[in-house]
Each structure stands twice: as C-alpha cells, then as structure tokens.
Image (cartoon, rainbow, N blue to C red):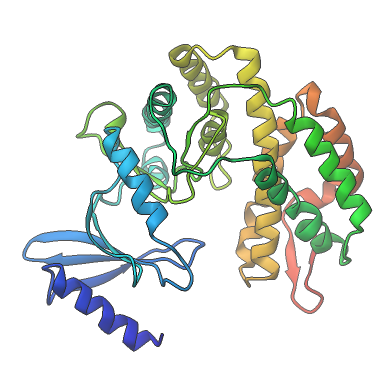
Length: 343
C-alpha cells in the first residue's frame, strides 16, 4: 500500500473511532515494522499503533494486553481496533521510559528496578492459578533456532565466510545438552522484551502498576529467569552490579524459588538470550542495513562472558573461546564492500 493510501486509511480509522480531525505527531519506532503516533484532540491524547498487516499481526499484542490488564498490570487499554488493517488506538501511558528517567536521575535505579521486579513477582504467583492456553511455549525448537544465529550470522560477519554445517551442529549439540539440564521451575508468562526501553515509570500508581508495559506481543510461556535476565542484562544500558544483586535477592525472597535452581536458569537463559542478541544484531547490520546495532555488542559480550562463568556452561564457553577470539567481542565496523566486520 502506498504511503498516501495508508495515511488516508488511518484518518478513516480515527474518524470512525471518534478522533476525526485529530492532530497526529509521529513517535519513535523500534526494530519492527510498527509505527506509532500520538493523537491529540480536544485536550485529550491517545497513541496510534500502525502495524501493516502484511508485515505484523496485532492480535498477539491485543491478547497479551488483555491478560496483563486482567491481572491488574499497567498495559495500555485498547480503545479502538481494526485487526484487518493493523491499527490500534491505545491509552497513552506517557513518555516516562525507564531509560529516559534513569538518564536524568541515575539515583532512581534501584527504586525503578524493584518496581519492575514486582511485576515479575506478580506474574510468577499468578502463573500458579492462571491458564494461558493461547500463549505459545518457549520450547527447545525456538531456543535452538535463536542460538543458531551465532554461526549463521555472527561468525560469517567476523570471518567473511559461511560456516560449516558440522561446526553449527557441534554448537547446537552443546545447547541441546545444556537445555536438557534447565531447572524445572514453574512456567510463567514471559513478556520477552522486558527492559528499560519498554518500561514506563508511572509513580502516581501503586505497586506493580507503577510500571507501564510496552512491546509485549512476543510473549511466551517459559522460565521466570528470562525476563529477569532481560532487564538486568540489558543490551542498551549498564545496570549497577549492586542493583542486580539487590533485585535477584528481592525476587528470590518474594518467590521462594531455590537459589541454586534460579541461578543456573539465570546463567543458562542469559547465555541463550545473549547469543540470540549477538546473532540478531549481526543480522540487523548485514541483512537489514542497520549497522548501529553493532555498537551494542561489547556490552552484550560482557553479559555473555559473565553468564558463561557458571561451571555447567564450561563446554559452551570452550566452544565460544575457540571460535570467537576476544578481539571480535568489542566494537565492530561493517565493511559494506565485503559485508563483513572489521575490529
């Protein structure tokens, strides 16, 4: 669909939803095809999500928003929808992203992160009596598809050559063995992209509702360690070590998960998630023409190296040390002529 046609379609949607003639102001997007606008009319404001239906499906977002709102969380209320055209009008939760608030006031880090931990504590306890029949499970197939991005995209980026199937299978076999040892902790609703760029500080609210939730359409069922890793091992900002320690202690106390089980799950899922991010950022640079994502890799590698210190992850650490020399774990620059990285 042409841009002008999409613009007119949105105007029709707004008119049908009671927002005819509203002023539209673009908002920053993300790594997806979705676009956002703030809509103003008569002293009121809402947010428009524009997700072209040939690129995105808004129904998972709507489904998870319903689960979160029913659980008393601060997901945005859905005010109007057109699933055929991929359009939503959402409650405007403001601009108070954790990342922005902490840039202005770093001293708030522990307070904000404890509030975010409250969200995850509530999700853990709710999972004991809530059935999420319509939410996919984060299963072995998905785990392996994601970690495979390292040999498929990152290693070719630094070597300039396709990697052998034998090397890829050796790597995946290590992961199969590791994931078979993943501690059996209660499965919870994982919001998946739970980090400072997707959390809003709403201090006028109470409890877990002080945290506004965004970008949760990829939610799955899986280990409670996943979202803890997501916001404590953030690819885009450094979290103070004392904050990380405080949040983990707080979470364990509030959930009564055995420490050894949780810390193994945290290291294992942290390694899996950071391998996925390394591969994803390489793919974004090479395939999608977004080389700025390579700027985040040094931090992601620091997180991964920390996770690999767990004794049970020693075989994976050995494989990575053998195939990714330390000089390739820093800032990389994409050589457009060869589509490979340079240090």
